[in-house]
Image (cartoon, rainbow, N blue to C red; front, side, top):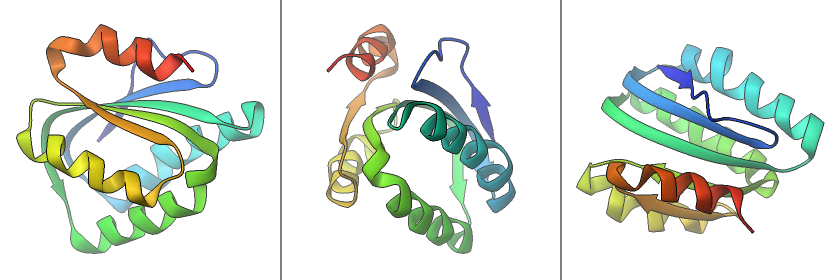
Length: 120
């Protein structure tokens, strides 16, 4: 499930991911908000807080990946906030598939993550 974070403002949006993501979550919550920001501001910055995230089905993951590539030129920065070790090492790999910057932060560094994603 995607939940919009209250610190979101301007062209910067934050989401908290919990549970298992589905195609419906992505299509009905995430994509419309990102596309609205892109229409309003041209480029978007994003913070993704991953808590109690249990993954997604392969079919949904592939669809998410395809859509992400379509919009990657309009996403300037992505801050991934999580205590999951796997995300710490996957984040640099994801950077090869997006034109924007992407960086991993620990949950205790949330304020630094917001600052980084807004700067630049």
